Amino acid sequence: MSETKLKPFIADQLLASLQPEIEEESQVKLHCCVKSQSFFQEKIRIWSSTYLVDRTLEHVSKLIHFENITLFPEWTDIPYGKEYWFTLVFSGLPKDCKVFDFLELIPQNGGFYCEGITRNSSDVYKIILDI
Image 1 (spheres, rainbow, N blue to C red):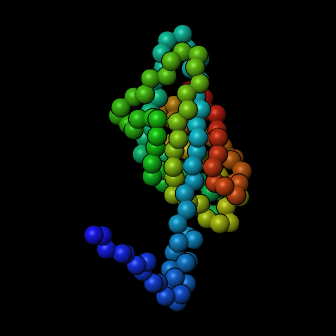
Image 2: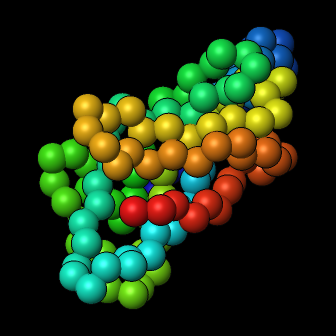
Image 3: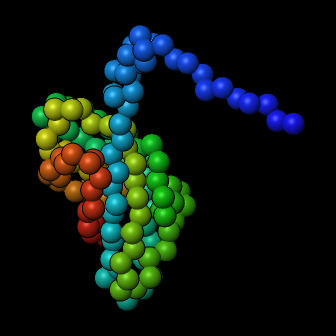
């Protein structure tokens, strides 16, 4: 015989006090596309030193998750002539942010960069990157 489980009661006052913390937690998703232009198979990876930078508020959002791409020092193969999509998730941008840059700061040439991304209400973006 199974026990009946009751739904817990949470006081309205407690819910109201937690609401600002819930609303402040946000994320920004970038769906990124690269296309191999070389006759040889190319490779990409993402570094943990990848950020979204608010152009006016000097805020920096950090990379918190990545899908379909490897993190430095591992490599992801990109087949010749094919589009390859991967997703990056960043900590939230300030509410007042209107335009931001995507920047991979690495100690070598070839870091990803996309300038002047206009903020939208969903905080989900599709960008094309050069390799």
